[in-house]
Amino acid sequence: MEATLAFILGIVIFVVGLGLSIALHELGHLIPAKRFNVKVTQYMVGFGPTLFSRRRGETEYGIKAIPFGGYIRMIGMYLPRKGESEDTIRNDSTGFAQQLSRDGETLGGEVIGPEDRHRTFVGLAWYKKIVIMLSGPLMNFVLAVVFTMFALVGIGTPQLTNQNLVGSVSQCVITETGSASTTSGCTAESTPAPALAAGIQPGDRIVSINAVPVTEFSDISAVVKPLGGQTVPIVVERNGERLTLSITPVQFTRPTSAEPNAPLETSGFLGVGAYFDYVRSSPGEVTSIMWMQFSATAESIINLPHRMVDVAQTTFSGEDRDPNGPIGIVGVARFSGEIVQAEVPGFDTKEKAATILQVLASLNMALFAFNLVPLLPLDGGHVLAAVIDGVRGVFAKMRRRAAPRPFDISRLMPLTVVVFLLIASMSVMLVIADVFNPISLFG
Image 1 (cartoon, rainbow, N blue to C red):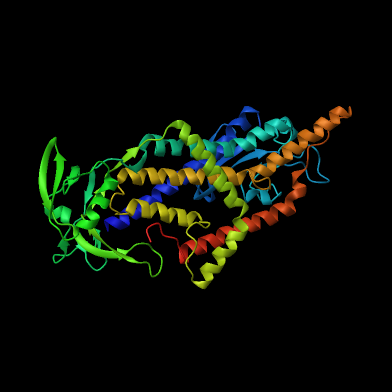
Image 2: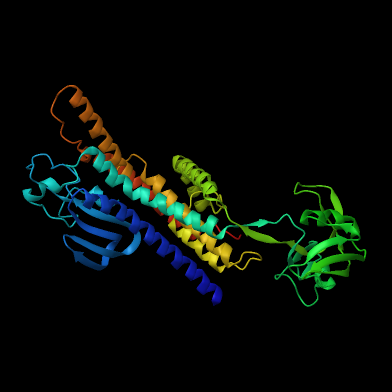
């Protein structure tokens, strides 16, 4: 029951983080739009039926039932249709699916009179359009930085200390495999691990084994290797005092490598785990980490169509999916649940929190990079249209001609529909794969 509640808690944390990411993305569009006096009639987080809304001034703010999207609705994102008056201004949206329709009534908007003609998006200078459309993805980038900073600078990452300090003591020896376990696999009949039997405790510092000094944790394996089955003295330091204990390392045989038919070797086993401490990164290190995250995300987006073919093949054939392959919202939500639910030795609350933060950072980096793709209905498509306007304006000025009419991005609507259908089909495929052939973090 507790494990189920922990799993649900992880999913809830992810959904809240996703909702926050979407809300701030749309806020990134909203603030400069209002700053540039564009009339914004709606700010919505989610899509589908409206759960809550309240009007403040000329803008309706609300939350919708499905928290996997959002939009702000600005007047005049598109030029009037062919045959319409120049005073025809429609209430259009930054929303992903909403842009597929040019019917103002279908969008829930109305035809607005000429008194608001000076407050349209399409009437803005090209660079102001870029600011409005880029501010949404940039908000996601800022969130990615903030989440990463909290995870790596605030909490840190567990790293093996270069010391002879004991972090954990195994409970038993699983003789069938010649390995140890701290919890699972131990029974009343199991052989206690040598370190436990000798009285070694977490936090002890190993000074020497069989009179051989130990200065680093990596020394332990080398010293113990030939001592299997022998009872030898071990000196530990505990609370500032040195204690001499007797220990009998377990002797077992194991392959020297993971290769098939690898030669075997006999080795000794104590049953102590290394001490891991949280090491905080510097802000400068985060800069390089963010660049690596962006590069990896961009590469994933470029290779996405090809990798989606692999997802489809493995899903419908029943083969295991590539753990490094594309994962949808359902899969990431499942990861979040597994992270909170996990009962893995050494994977404590701090590391779970840091991992969840890094999941949210990766999500926001993906939203940032994906929205920069210069295709409608993504934000990058509107940025490209604004750049085209700017270039055309520069050439017109050089030729001493009147400023050209803004580029009519509705002419790209057929391509927009194709892009939308591709993205929608990939999203559905990922949902199917995440449900019926999921990737698990812990096997």
